[in-house]
Amino acid sequence: MSRPHVLLSAAVSLDGCLDDTGPERLLLSGPEDFDRVDALRAASDAVLVGAGTLRADRPRLLVNSELRRARRVEEGRPAFPLKVTVSASGAFDPADPFWTTGGDRLVYTTDKGAGPARDRLGAAAEVVALGPAVDWAALLDDLGGRGVRRLMVEGGARVHTQLLRLGLADELRLAVAPTVVGEPDAPRLFGPGAYPGGPRSRMRVLGTEQVGDVIVTRYAPTVPGTAARATPADRHWLRIACDLATLCPPSRTAFSVGAVVVAADGTELARGYSREGGDPTVHAEEAALAKLGSDEPRLAGATVYSSLEPCARRASRPKPCARLIVEAGAGRVVTAWREPDTFVPGADGIGVLAAAGIAVAEVPELAEAAMIPNNHLVNPGTHK
Ligand SMILES: NC(=O)C1=CN([C@@H]2O[C@H](COP(=O)(O)OP(=O)(O)OC[C@H]3O[C@@H](n4cnc5c(N)ncnc54)[C@H](OP(=O)(O)O)[C@@H]3O)[C@@H](O)[C@H]2O)C=CC1
Ligand SMILES: Nc1c(N[C@@H]2O[C@H](COP(=O)(O)O)[C@@H](O)[C@H]2O)[nH]c(=O)[nH]c1=O
Image (cartoon, rainbow, N blue to C red; front, top):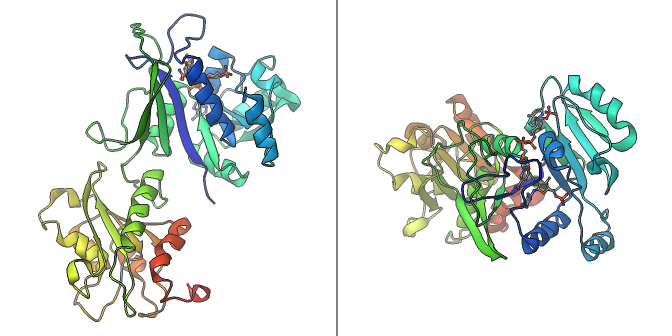
C-alpha cells in the first residue's frame, strides 16, 4: 500500500525555536509566509498536528483563501483538507476550533486513548486506535489506504522529531524568521537524540526563496533506510538509478540498468550503468562497484540501488552482480523491477542476496520507470 508524500512544515527563529514560552502563540511567519502555508495546505489531502500543538495554539488549520477552496472543489476535492491529530492520552477539548471548523477530522491514538477521545469528541471526529502505541508507519499506511496522497505535517516539535528520526519524511520545508527567541525552555524544532546517518550526514537542499522577511528552504533526506521497506530517501536514490538506465547504449540482447552505491550516512560512493564506457557486457552494479577500491571502508553498511534486480547467473562474466554485491560487503539492496524471464529464466538475484543476509527492499511503484529503456525487450504482459 502506498504511503502519502510526507511534507514537514515549520517556521523557526534564528536560534531554532518553534515558539517562545509565553502564553500567546509566537507568529514567526509574516503575512506573505502564512499565505504560502495556506497554498501548501490547499495542495494537501490532509494536514496533521500533534495534540500538544492543539493545546498550545488552538489552531483551525483551514485553507483560508476562498479562491483556493473553490479550486479544490472544482477539482472534485473537499474544500478543506482532512485534519489529522495524534494523541496517546485522548485528552481533547471539543470546544477547540480544530473540532468545530473546516472539513473532516481524524484522530490516531492508542487503545487506551481511544475511549477518552471518543467520549470527548463524539461525532466531531473519527477516532482510530492503533494498538498499545501509535506506530507512525501504521498511521501513514492507514492514511494511504484512505486515499491521502499528500500529507502536510505542521508540527509540533515532538511530531516533527519522530517523523525525521524514523526516516518517514519526504521533505522538510523550513521558514527561518529573522528573530532570536533566546529562552532556554522554548520548544526547539528537533529534539535531542539519534537521527538517521548521525550529525555528519547532510540533507539535500531542493531550493530556497525569500517570502516577505523569512527564508524558506526545502530539504530532502538522503540517508538510506535500514529495513525491507523503502523510505523516501531510498526512493530518491532509486529514481536516480532508473534515470541512469536511460543512458545505456541500446542493446537487443541485454537489459539497460542503472545503479548507485550509497554509504550509510547518505554519501553517494559510485554510480554506473549497463555497457558504460564502451564495455559491451558490463552490468550497472558491476560498473559502479568497480569504481570503488575493495578496501573502501564505507562499503560495509552501504546500500546498492539498482533499477533491475541484481543478476543471479550470467554467461558473459564469471560472477553475477548479486555475488559481487555480497562480496563487496554491502548491507542492503533496493530495486524497482524483478528480472523477467527474457534472457535468464528463473533468475533469482533477490534470493541470492537474501540467502547471504542482505536486506532487500523492492519499490514496485518505480518498476515502470525501470522498464522504460527496456520496452523493446519485454512484453509487459509476461513480467513475473
Ligand atoms: N512555528 C511553527 O511552525 C510551529 C510551532 N509549534 C509549536 O510547537 C509547540 C508544540 O510542540 P509539542 O509540545 O512538541 O507538541 P506536538 O504537537 O508535537 O504534540 C505532542 C503530543 O502529540 C501526541 N503524540 C506525539 N507523538 C505521539 C505518538 N507517537 N504516539 C501517541 N501520541 C503522540 C502526544 O499527545 P498526548 O499528550 O495527547 O498524548 C504528545 O504529547 C507549541 O509551542 C507550538 O506553538 C507547533 C507547530 C508549528
Ligand atoms: N507559528 C507558526 C506556525 N504554526 C502552525 O500554524 C498552525 C495554526 O494555523 P492556523 O490554524 O491557520 O492559525 C499551528 O497550529 C502551527 O501548526 N506556522 C507557520 O508556518 N508559521 C508560524 O509562525
